[in-house]
Image (cartoon, rainbow over all chains, first blue to last red; front, side, top):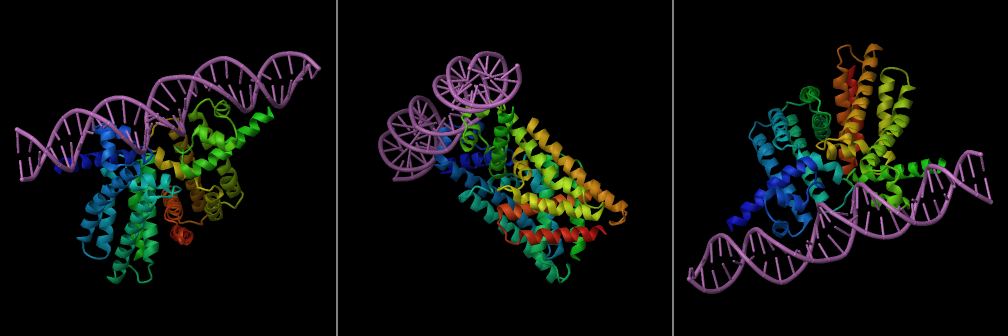
Length: 193
Length: 193
DNA sequence: GACAGATGTGAACGATCGTACTATTCTAGT
DNA sequence: ACTAGAATAGTACGATCGTTCACATCTGTC
């Protein structure tokens, strides 16, 4: 009972690390087995298909994301503080894995490949964007943000600068990436008042 | 003389189409040869290595990008009109290939893979961002944008909403993606005054 | 301590990958 | 028309891919 679950979570964490760096295409059963110290077929037996493995990895990422980003934010006061908390936690989240946010890392490679894996990613992304929009909506209700603010547009604007940070930091290695993000977020909050 | 160049450009356009959809990992010599109707080795002889092919594809993308986005923008009046032209042309550019902007499509998959291909992409991305920053700087000098605007920050903010559009449109298939982008761009211009 | 089921191994499969090599077919310049 | 060289084809190579299957080992329960 215990043994299987243990190695399975070991596998998934190793896989998540790989995915954050090399994407889903960079995750092969043979290489992963070698990393974890299992035989190829031994690892395969845990998932029975590559697709199942990929989804299990994404589910693991979602679980950690909720634990590290969403849950702590929900403990903050409703409204603007909660929005700020999401931003702050997301910043930490991006640094947790060596390749940055795995969702962003794989979104471009998967956006033209229909299937279960894509559906899963799209679903979780929409959940997250709805969480942001809801937080913004609450901030409006609390009187922190202006009444005519469009929460969906806020979610777009917010996620855009997050994507920008990933791009400038991970690809361009721009040492100013953090400052650029902070400035952009500050401006977004300012315009939401 | 002519024959070789012809088939080579045919190959590169087909390859660019594939890359925009499936990324660089999705570009295999065998599949590409089949698409173009050549033998694997016949196609290979044009580039002598996969890496060379990848760079040639990126160079092709850069050439088209300059022709369709940059050059027309430079014909617009200096300052804000030119900035708006870049935005408009970029919008068309994203629709040119079936998988959207190839640079965005491959940036996440390549950001942890050091090598010539990555260097090429980073270089061209920096060129483009500098072009945006320069356009913004000119807009400041022309009195269109406010004097204390940071052109580099403007480039970040602008590119962020472009990345956002790609994400919302290509991955999430959000029918509102275009409106979201237009709103965000409008707000960006407004805040730059 | 034996037995059953969970867990892991090893070898093999067909497919595809990038690359190298030789041998053709085509094309352009004379 | 002839010929040199470019352009393309054909075949084979080692490697890796996901997957299957028969077999071994471990683990926990009675």
